[in-house]
Image (cartoon, rainbow, N blue to C red; front, top):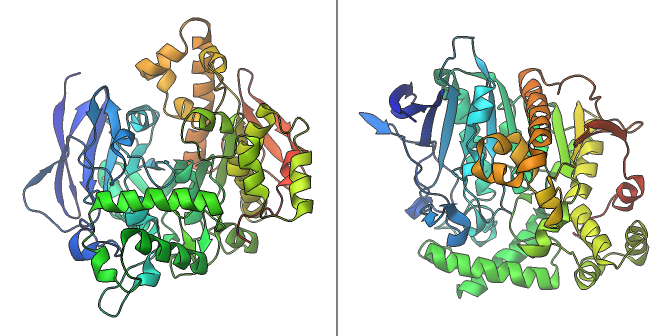
Length: 501
């Protein structure tokens, strides 16, 4: 565990990190000025230079969120602050082999929680396999992913899509600085999970991200998170009312404390779930200069960035949400509430694809499809018509997860991607005994394919691109295999479905 310091000179000054276990690490390097004071709700500004050496040995703040989401270990929580626009770099100790592919990770958390410092996102295992790994913080919730721009006044401008602007600036930072760490700026793969995967898919349609990445991986992208400017303005008005601020009170928004914003945000989400305005209130808005067109529509039109893409989901997506984060429709009343706004033909078509409905297992499967698989199918069809697109389904679950009723639920593919079964105490606990060998095999398969894709844009042999004719899906499991259109009835049932009506 011997650490020794290591320095790198980037555009803004010298950063000092440390070497441990064969990798070099720098933590919490600022890529933007702190978005505080008059910069709250404004597009991010590039970080200002510093003199001397900036110590980047430890994680600083994550974006404001509920404290229990910021746990780093037993009794250890990450501090939160609006001053959170930082990124981390992990690189192999030996980079003499020429510039390495770069993998930039965007964390998930429903756009309301999460941090690049979460232990599972460590990235050392990926770096050891031959890449420079970058993980990014961005503004969350009301401070970054709720469009309040309609409340702007002549004196106070509030910008839209702040978190997307943050991510674009972070990717510009990578372009400018990553060569210093041994990375190849012309070979950047962005990847993310859940809301992070949704951010990845959305960046495909952000004109300002053109040329900032060469390929993309979206693991379980969420559906229903994009709203148009009219719906965004309605949410903004509600939000101001919850804070007791007049719609013309943009100045007052700069003075509200982060905890008051969080409280109002929770109320806004709860109210929105009740009366379904047509989308979750937190997430990107389409129709501005950052995101002119809905991402899936941009993919369909061929105006999205035509980079190779891996997209997929997990076999039991919905099960996580039966115990935690009760935000998905996983029982009959919730399913009926979600489908109430659609016309009867659409509702009947969707229900018919789940023969055991309204039994619990059918509801959970329907909820998982509504939230994640519908997005995978839509993205695969839309992007796959214009650029190489590879689709997967992650089925692997060690016995411990199967016995607990979780199975291959949402986010469990991260254990394979980040090599948790090999390196983490938690991963070893999950695979005690008989599952260890298969867990390591699946992890190796996933990492090998993600690695091949990050190097050359093709995820290894035997995984054909997804086409409307064949719909090849790589299924990661004890025996990894290729299937063609594995759930056609369910896929067809969700075609064209949208909450926005």
